[in-house]
Image 1 (tube, rainbow, N blue to C red):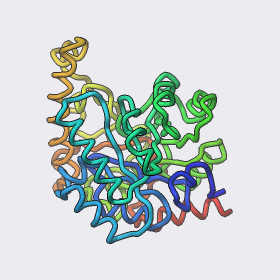
Image 2 (cartoon, rainbow, N blue to C red):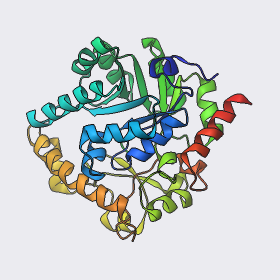
Image 3 (cartoon, rainbow, N blue to C red):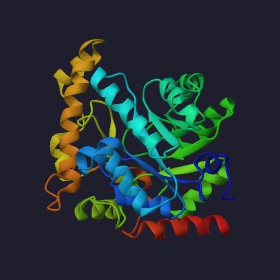
Image 4 (cartoon, helix red, strand yellow):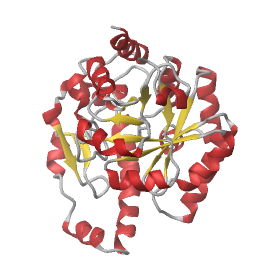
Length: 324
């Protein structure tokens, strides 16, 4: 059961992804996941801005820690020409450093598919419903990351079973993203028909992740009812842990922000403001060992997480679930 279309595409032993996370994807976490037999995925902004590595140097650090395949995440929403140029550079460097698996998020993935194809690259695209899957399919992607309503970050609106059924007609491998925090849930998603599972929250609560101890403790202590959707980070709902700080801030964007986001031209300015603010705020809160900010992203998979443990232990438990 460990062999699926996804494991063939990624060249890994186990149909499991340590998902790209801003700000939590530090090099040691990515490397540990890959070394254990899953696929660790680099999040470029986390690697450079949060954890302070020049991009190529960061990839080479990961390569010193593991020789196994890694992936790279590309956020490709229509943005400034400077950001597009930077992403093109990151893709080029990734290919030069041997990365062959790419997860694209937002936007049209066609240009990345075209860029990596000559090198044997594989592209899976984040989708939350068939409408976005159709556009990604037309862009030539090789598979989907199906983000369901139990995911952390920008969650979808469908449950895992309904989303898989909705995406099945495209005939591409589908990886489940959302709601999997333990080995039993991992096995259930594969039995349901998914080609793999992407976990984020589960890997934050590991010894290799550089997230603060209060952040990890909050994940362990939380259950699904503690996950709420906040518009205060990016202007659209993001799954976070309910904390006193979150309650004081409120969950809805302010009236001015909502007005800005409704305008066809205004929304790009508002999203830029949100992006700049959230990059700093999430970086600060995730690394703050004092736990003073308490603004922590997480998904409903917290239900299955009862302790902080090593990445190797997490992956071993998931592997055992397939062998029994």
